[in-house]
Amino acid sequence: MPFTPFHLGFGVFIFAICPFIDITAILIGTIIIDIEGVLYLLFKIGALHGYSHSLLGVMIYLIPCTFFSWIFYKLLARMTKIEFRFNWILSGISSLIGLISHIIFDGSLYPEMMSLYPFSKVQGHLIGIMSYQTVIIILISMFAVGVLIIAVKSLLRFKFEKNILLSYNLLKPLNIEDSIHTES
Ligand SMILES: [Zn+2]
Image (cartoon, rainbow, N blue to C red; front, side, top):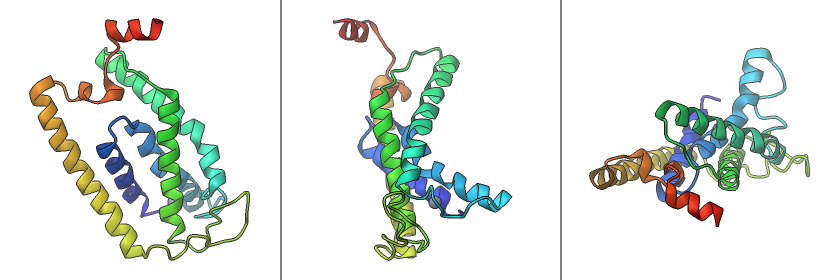
């Protein structure tokens, strides 16, 4: 659980190198599974790395994760008065990547995890593929490199496009050309 924020590093890096990815969906995907840990720590419900730290969790959280991303863009559109493009499939894939990354990173650290549940109840499938230090170094590096790439790209694009938000595919406003494309 104290490890949760480190997962965000993966999402930041993937978005930095694949800007068509839905940043909101992948970031939510990297951490949402730890709701299980929060419930355990606060109310002693379930386990720290129980049933949802598995393929079951990936399946359970895929739709909420994508939906939360859609809500985020709706709110952003309301605040900025710009109509944002939202692609359910792309956001679903982004959520999926974030969710699976959580299982892989956690799975290599926690022996109690049943990564393949509900298909298998065997624990510790992924244990030891990376040491604790390696996982921490990978995720911190991904965050740092990701932020650097995004910052450089944003600075360059801001210079030309004068708007950082509009420089990413998902955040482009619908314009007349887009409407023509969707109608045809
Ligand atoms: Zn976790």
